[in-house]
Amino acid sequence: MKVVLFEDRCRDGAPVGFVLSRAGVACEWHHEPGAIVRAVLAGTPDAIVWALRPESDADLATLRLIKLIVPEVPLLVVEPESLALSPENRNDLRPTFVGRLPVNAVEFFEVIDGLRESTTSV
Image 1 (cartoon, rainbow, N blue to C red):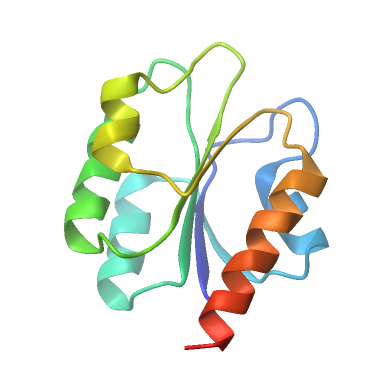
Image 2 (cartoon, rainbow, N blue to C red; image 1 turned 120 degrees about the horizontal axis):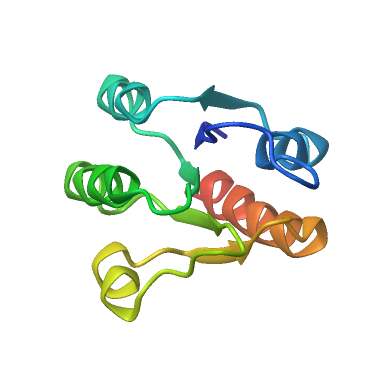
């Protein structure tokens, strides 16, 4: 399973990348939005995980671009406590999963396991 992850920096609680590694998911971890766009262009991932930064219009713009490039790829969004995706953004991005920081590992594992099953049955 190929997962690309955008996570700007470590936050309180377990970083998203750490939770993914505990689930046995190897991911390409990117700290700059342009790098994740390049990774998506280089080869379609099985999933995209994005830890939103507070007050970041650049994150939302990059996610919209990515969804134009690979609309079929599942998008998992993790929001900081200070930010929630607006209904308009949820409608535009159509994320498969939206969670809050700190990441609920059990809930996140269930989503990842479901994605694994869907990628292996194709």
